[in-house]
Image (cartoon, rainbow, N blue to C red; front, side):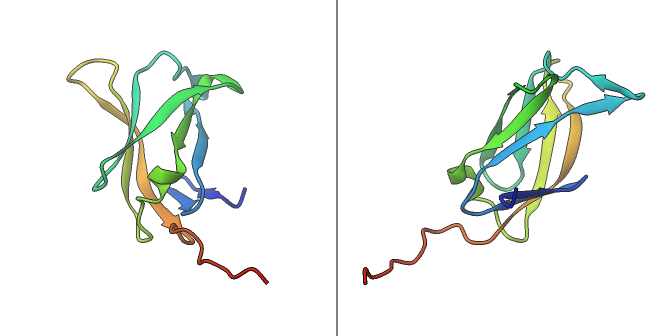
Length: 115
């Protein structure tokens, strides 16, 4: 997909796109079941919390989702993100963190004249 580029610690999303990122966690060589946890995807410096839903293609995995409007709030230099397990009140656990940024453009395309 040209809409997003993911590495171990960086998420890059086209400013006119959206994000649907399948995520799974492996511990001690076994896939950890994320489906039973209360998770939050947070972006620092921007009032932005992504949606975390079950991955229909992986019963133990999740999908991290940002709408097009949310992606448009990201910056090109990027900012930090965290995927937090908030299942146990007052004892959050960060499962993944890194940098998220936008590439391309976010505003509506320039108007064109009909020929």
